[in-house]
Image 1 (tube, rainbow, N blue to C red):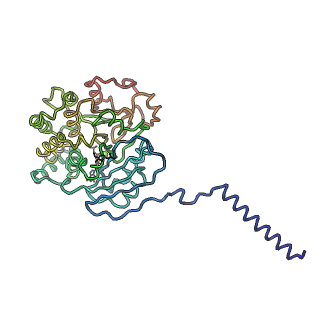
Image 2: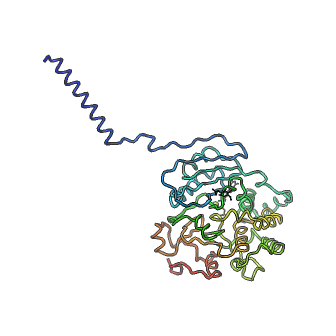
Image 3: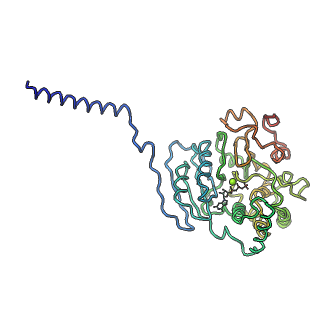
Length: 389
Ligand SMILES: Nc1nc2c(ncn2[C@@H]2O[C@H](COP(=O)(O)OP(=O)(O)OP(=O)(O)O)[C@@H](O)[C@H]2O)c(=O)[nH]1
Ligand SMILES: *[C@@H]1O[C@H](CO)[C@@H](O)[C@H](O)[C@H]1NC(C)=O
Ligand SMILES: [Mg+2]
């Protein structure tokens, strides 16, 4: 064998060896390609005003068998993007990653691409983006806008929280009387309202939407407290007018005692904190709720005062629902600045892998109305409610 032939043989052997090495190492190491870290995501088209659009995100795990006809709903501005991202991450990690419920985003302006891209990537269900029609975010014709402006200036001078804000008033009126009538919301029976920068601290045990349906609940809350009276001086007068003109809408077995200490003469300012709500859209769309909202809206306090959707929803639920139709979620641990609901019972906190600080629980504090809710309904308070944390 010549020297050249021998070298050629070594060369071929070396080549075969290298090829084998690459084959084996590739198959055993499973070098990830970029696509396995970044699965393809949906892209977007331009949204025209008054149009809505939807995006299906690919989802991994299996769907729960029985589902409710329900959606998350968020009213937000484009500038809320990072605060709502945080909320979504929390809701997904503690609940929705196993359920893939839809999420509806509503805005008085068009959502931009950055907002849609990020929120669609974070939500495990289908996302929908809706623009609020102008008629639902403007002054009704019976409102005197000069008078409304005067009120804002005066409430601003008095340093009443959001007293000088026009957009906050449109927001409160929209949440009080319109969000459940948005075309996108007509596709669902139940909603869960999520605001920017909230946190969930415990695993959600089971499906709250299904719980609502199976137990005939129409409204639910995690935190309740007293409202600032400066924002609602004549709200109760308006409610009394409604009770007088629509006695047929007042429920037997209602929760009047939760919101009044004197059988309905005056309002004690207790309300469910509406930045968290799981509720029935069918109830909000009912004649009774619409008659109630329209009465309040005619009286003008959304603009001439600064009525919040929290007392508006809470009074409606307290008067027009049976008290058993309202539910308090002990298991859903929640934060929205500045209050926390953290389950009182240590066992519950451990079972649900909670990471809230029990000493920050607001339920039994002086400014909370939750103790009153338990007392008027003769409900048993959770273990640990009276232990100093
Ligand atoms: N699209 C839109 N969303 C708004 C506007 N103002 C408020 N929102 C949304 O309405 C919700 C409530 O507004 P926030 O600014 O969170 O009010 P807040 O400080 O939590 O109010 P309180 O809980 O009453 O103290 C949030 O989901 C906001 O993103 C607005 O002008 N346009
Ligand atoms: C969900 O509820 C809406 C509103 O009632 C209804 O129009 C829709 O058909 C329901 N969808 C399903 C899948 O049941
Ligand atoms: Mg908020």
